[in-house]
Length: 341
Image (cartoon, rainbow, N blue to C red; front, side):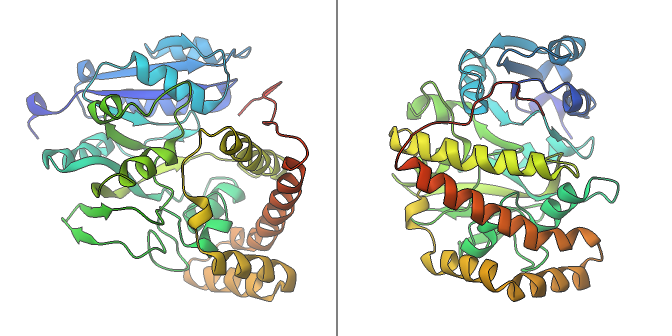
C-alpha cells in the first residue's frame, strides 16, 4: 500500500451524551493503519453533559457546537468544517472492526466514477447485546426494511445485501453499484464515505444532512456509481435494552414525518414496495410468518437473538402506526431532552 497516495479523510461524528460509546469509536479510528496526518476527526456536539467532550479531546478531535442537537444537524455542522478529500459519516455508536478498514474503504475511490463507498454488512459479534446481534444478523435496525427490500447491509435470511434489483459488478474486494432514479437502498449512514466535493457542489446541505437522502437526491438527477465494500462496521445500537430500541424507533418515525412535512426530507419512501408494507402488517397480525423467519434465521446462524424478531416487528408496527396517526394532528420531533446513547 502506497501511503503517500492515500486520500485525506474527515470523520464527521455528531454527539449528544455519547460517553458510553464514543471512546470505542475514536480509538478504532486512531488505530487505523493509515497516515494519521491524513485523518481528521470532527465532533459536532449537541450540548453533552457527560464525559463526551473529555473523550473527544483525548483523541484529538476538533469540536464544534451543534445548537440544533439532532444527529442530522450535527453532520451538517461537521461537513461545513471539513477540509479533506473524503468525508465519512460515522456515528458515535459505530466502531471500525479492523485496522485495515479505512484502507479497504477508500480503495474504490481509485475509480473516478465512484462517488462513495459503504460497508456491505454489520459486524456480528457473539459478545454484543441480543438486539445488536439481531440487527447485525438482519443487516438493518428497522425490520420493516426487510419486507420493503430496501435494506443496505447483508441479511442472513435473504443472503443478500439488499432486496432491490440493482446493476452491480464484482470488483473483488468491493461491488460497483449503479444507482438511478427509483427505489433505492437506505445507503448513507454507519460508515458511508463520500467525496466531499460532490456534496459541496451539489448544494444539498443546509442546516441538516439526512444521510439516506443524499444519494436519493443525487440519483434522482442522474445515474451514479457507488461501491459496497466487502467489510463490516460495528454498530452498538441498543445492546439488550428494549426501552432504547423503542425510543430509537420512535425517534426515527417522528423525525422523518416532521421533516418530511417541513419539505426537507427527500428519500422516496412513498415509492417503496406497497406489497411489502402489506406483508409486514399481515405478518405482524398473523405472527406465523415472523416465527418462521426467526426459525429460518436460527437454522442459518444459531443465535437466540433471532427470537427478538417478532417483538421487534410488533414494536415497529405499533410505534409507526401511532406516530403516523398523531402526525395528522400534531407535527413534532422527538425531544432530545436528557438524550443519551
